[in-house]
Picture 1 (cartoon, each protein chain N blue to C red):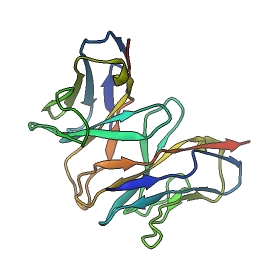
Picture 2 (cartoon, rainbow over the protein chains, first blue to last red):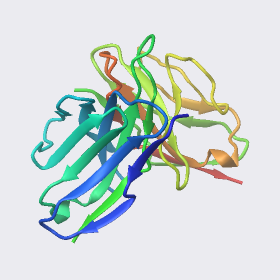
Picture 3 (tube, one colour):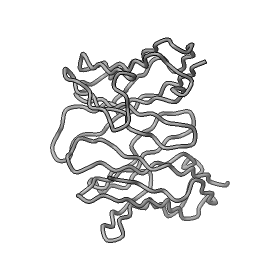
Length: 119
Length: 110
């Protein structure tokens, strides 16, 4: 399958600083990328959907000014956690999907995730 | 709102025994259902989706709209099946926005 790479895999930052997480599709053009958050022993929760060249669509309860998403090219989306607090500590996962094919769409491929710890 | 329920957080099965991972969903439209798997130290990956009606690694899942279920089954468990399994639902708008269940950790006992 296609490869989605997330960077960094782990990051520790101080409260009040901003952290940027990158999600790249390495061998396909990702028209849509999704950002998820996973708390320990809980499910993945969709934060936002980003389409290349347009503003991200945030899920209810997700602060768009807190979690800035940029999808400037067909192979890169970034999530910036601004003014990070300890409660933002979590596992963040991106997934990327190629252009819609026949039928119901194409498979989404997942990055390896980023463990964010805010101290 | 759509919801996916996986009632079992942990499931242990002996090698060679049948496996069934339960998944129930609630959604008013026509959803698409998926099973994703995460092996130890690996990323989440698609196992199967109901519209393809495939059998992957011996696993099958049938969408039962009457019972709103999409249980994952395998007749004979293998040790390499030990992993975290997530059931997921996509709404009928075709945008692949996924709602995940809480996952079931399957352990195959040798």
